[in-house]
Length: 131
Image (cartoon, rainbow, N blue to C red; front, side):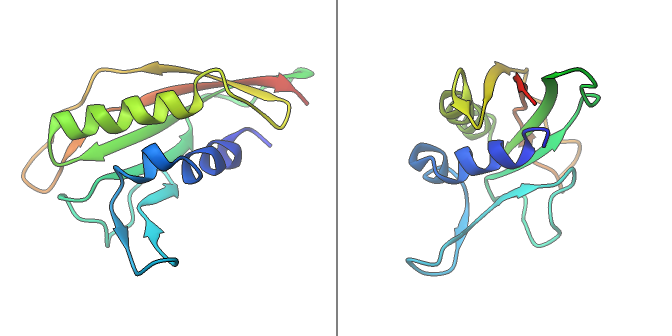
């Protein structure tokens, strides 16, 4: 357990995050564009607002978790990507979950690489806790 699944659970339960993420399907069976993955699924488009979560730092070998994750908050405008990143940070920052605490920092937005890409406002999440 490194915190990836716990980050996903918190974000998937946050109404403020879900309100900003692209969804498909019909109520009550919506599918939101939130995945534990380094690369977005191919069926997500550049106009979608999405979140990918992955561990970006090494595993902690001690008795205490101290592991870094990246939450990529992507959208078709810089403002939407920043709003999504702020909602992610608000949902996670200083939240305790399963003997873990999350500490978030908002990184600078990354512009699209080309016309097949969108804006990315990464959030770095430090996961700390006892094993």
